[in-house]
Length: 428
Image (cartoon, rainbow, N blue to C red; front, side, top):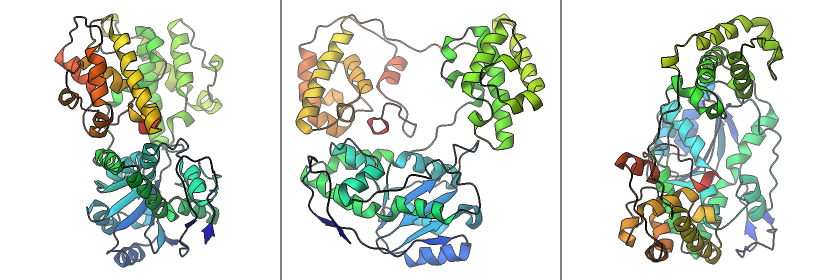
């Protein structure tokens, strides 16, 4: 079908386009049926892929649905009945097959966690859109912008672990990949026109190897928002409560906030340290917990209160730079350079170079463009666009003596490859 493209305000001229009609997606919940389908697409050179998890409902998220589209066909695979679709894995790990995602990060983590797959030759339509200066880069917004299509969002928080899935849920899931290859073509063409294909290629390459880092579950309480405001005694109580809650959530296979929310545990820890142990008075305490698990919670509180003073938990100390009185001024100079370049390129400033990277440059104070390349999270394309002006701005900046341990410097300029980058502009 042919559809006119809306939004004449777009900075990128968009002519009328053709959206290819596809056959209705197949729902495959048998291993042999999946193998036959994979055999029919064995020679494809592009696959659009999406996954559905259930982190809003389950304790440990996993893949509950796999949606894929080639240029000829679409299918929805049910992992609960087919097991590991090994043929699909071979395609996704082949560098001769381009794998197209929208917002690949979470999908890549699930694919590695559940199947051990290391997807290569990635194209992420979200990243591509941001590199084109598109501010509304959600899939629904992009499909409406480029193809005039409106996606139904009614199943955004559906429980994909439930069976059987309704026809409406399957229809919703299918739309995530049906037009993704067409979108990839449009975005790829626009990247070429603006000479930004190499930017995208560098970002896509960095997505390879994305996976969850192994976290120490005993330290989970330190990652609770608001924990830094507690006393060490309150932290000890919170630690016991979080360990109890998470183990219960694991047993029930239920998202932790559906058992007891973090805010409720924080308030319980605050009150308990002051001698108040009436759980019924804690805001947000679920009735079911009060009726069936209150004794377990009270036991966890007692364990926290019994921790000897010398063994009370604390947040680990981090390496810090000695205070540089000129640091804020240097960052401001870099920000001025960044903002001017972002306006020239019509990019969101955070996409061009986020705050953490500006600070990393300010700490390193490189004297040449070559030294900029030593900052791990700074991309080559960013250096190409900003390097000369960054060095010039630093040359004119005031200088103060400063020092930090090498560990602190490494921590301030980059993180280990393959771990989640919280400063990534593509997750803003």
